[in-house]
Amino acid sequence: MLQPVKPLMNKLGYQFANPELLEQALTHRSCKGKHNERLEFLGDAVLGLIIAQTLFELFPQTREGDLTRMRSALVKGVTLAEIAQELAIAQYLRLGPGELKSGGHRRESILADALEAILGAIFLDSGMEACRERILTWFGERLKQIAPGEQKDSKTRLQEYLQGLRLPLPVYDVIATAGEAHQQTFTVRCTVPGLKPITAAGSSRRKAEQDAAHAALEQIKNER
Image 1 (cartoon, rainbow, N blue to C red):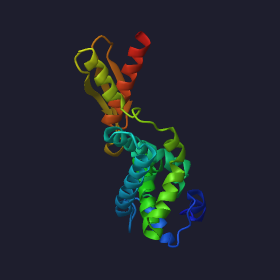
Image 2: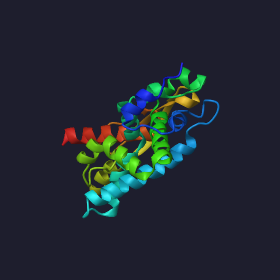
Image 3: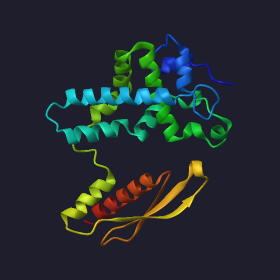
Image 4: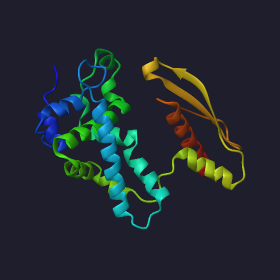
């Protein structure tokens, strides 16, 4: 049984004039019929523009590079998935049998895509200002906490640290993969001069590399 979307509208803080748009936004491509990929495309553009404009206004003295990193931190998949979880979107997703069986309602990429699709649906239903209001509400605490210069990812920070000491750059190797194609786990080894090799696992190679770099930075910090 599909969940009625009225309670979700209350959670989102937005009442759709056309609820079918919300239903489409919640429909993954694994389901038959109209799905949410086109709405996701639209919502991604709306989100990027509004977050960029908000940061531009909040930080008038900040350089373009820092603004770009701040925007990336706010609109990256893990952040969108966290907000989707806070809004309880998972229980309203329409997934095909395969995705249901594999726990697709918990998958970061599906949750992030659904949030963007909902923004696309709101844009079609009411326009840009309605989207702006929702984005500033949903991202409110994160916008209060974000600051220039704090968004460099772990791989970048580790690389810059080693470059500052004129040491060789870290080497990342995938040493194992497990699971089926749609739900793989990657294990990565990070080799850093002067440290024991560090391994980390993640749902993507990129995530595993970032986690390994973070662990390397923590190890360096503890040994200083």
